[in-house]
Length: 73
Image 1: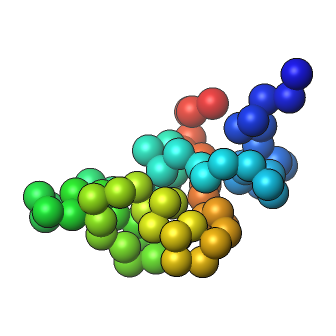
Image 2: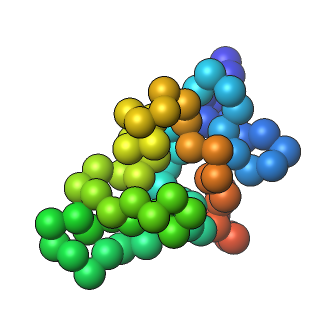
């Protein structure tokens, strides 16, 4: 059976799979704004949803900038 979140050599999810988990990304930050608590430093997004979901809703593609934090699997 193939792991749906199997990562490619670059550390990003392979094409055709679900959105990456922002909580495991080096670009994810918690915002000071209680109305928009999640943010992405690459895209400058602050939202209630995970930034990867906002990227998908806006572009129809999964986040191309996902980078796994050091020490995570």
